[in-house]
Length: 273
Image (cartoon, rainbow, N blue to C red; front, side, top):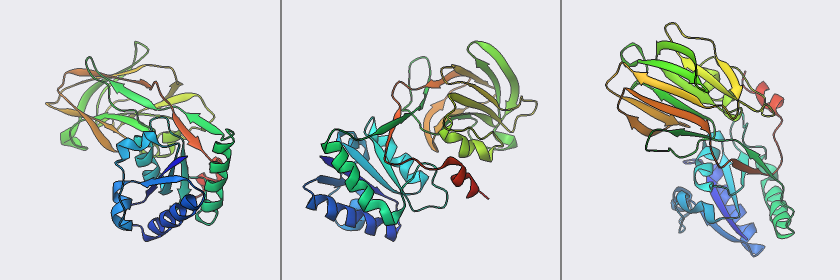
């Protein structure tokens, strides 16, 4: 078995736990690698996160941001999240139980009994490009947020116009991402058991309220009224745009795969206060 470890950047507790997990896994005859940043902290040879899809299991140690970083390189490899943050919607395992839970997953993998859950991801597409899948959200926006950075938008859902306005941008989120950027933009919370997507205009002049559509819906954002715009996925700029243009956002072909126990959605919500 081959396990990848990703520790939160500049977090000594995460680095210590990664070192301990590595020691215990190697004692169980498990091959282990760490990402380049963690490797530098631990003075080891590391593996680029883009190559983590070769692993059988990836363990993310930190907050939700670390989990999303690990998931970028996973490409189908199950990710198990160890929570060192405050909320931890994506990370269900506490640090004190991390070693035991990871070793349980190793035993389950070797017995071909490792349970894996799939959650949808999003992909943004243009006429001749497709951006990498994202876990939380895709944002189509002007070059900067604020009065001087807005764009003219038309939002269509499965070909039907939903809204036309000038706005900072449009956000399309998965249920997983409804608790992240979408929530800070006054979007609705969506239970992870709901099969849908959130469409949320950001600071629109005359926009419509946030909308939840079916997960198979195709959301098209037509952008104009600006010299430039960008597509942002999970906080990363994925594509620079040359308006007028259209971006289609829909469910990605490959889901995110999650290993380990599930977090209590409502318990995690209580930590948002």
